[in-house]
Image (tube, rainbow, N blue to C red):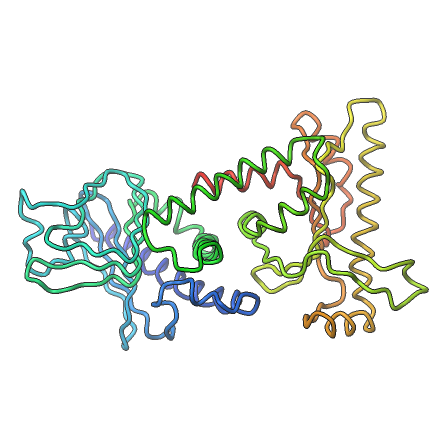
Length: 385
């Protein structure tokens, strides 16, 4: 390998490793403010001080695989090693795994999977080949041929093409998805994601969510309350599609300023995003809001304007200090003036998209409009990833 290319790969791995750890710790601290148990869901390595997390990395020249291992080491450091052949063999200090005809526990070709709290002994753990490789290790234990016990606190093996094209350029989203995966599973099953069997169970749950989204979101006969209940009971939808953490569903906003508001209000959901910003979310019925007739444009404009006024009222409610103080007293949460708002509405067909987009072109920046079909597409992409 040419020196220039070797230096480039080393720099890419170091950039990712540093950004991964810093982003993970930052988002974990942010998440902890709304989900205090989050540290019980993530690998132990990320519960130590940032300066104590070191990285050992390896690159296989001929198989084009990257291995990145995060470990606890008092003198924080980054090590890069160039090798050939099966990248996992580098962990065998005796060199026996590199010999031909060694018994292998798993032969992977282009495999994506999760290895956690598994122990492999008596044979070489892996032989890894092919493209589209993404293997995640967490508390993974194995024995060397000389009998020594080894443990990977947390790490990855990527095919270089996948690492370069899909991971390196999108580290923050990658980390967000990882943290949410740990939390989703912990919330469902009350323990850490701990094996490929657990991952299959988690995947089955995701598939059930996707199928229910199809059933509810695209059926004009479904009532709005059923949609509300479904989204509220399955916070994974907003967490994975919009990166929102649901906090308060159906919270009454008591009207204490009679001259400004006619009555109490009840938004569908009050959330926080990953940056700790407060978001008020309202759902619109799953029925299609665009009609195929001459009044289609007027109908949709009327719907949009009605919802704009409703969301504007939510924001202006928190402009009043009396309201903010009362809300904090009741819920324990301090909402700032003019919080952001999101509006989830019924699905929009591709053939009707232009009418819809024309109707919201003057939409103020603090109102984010998401259609149910867009929500479905995002969750489907997450499920298939």
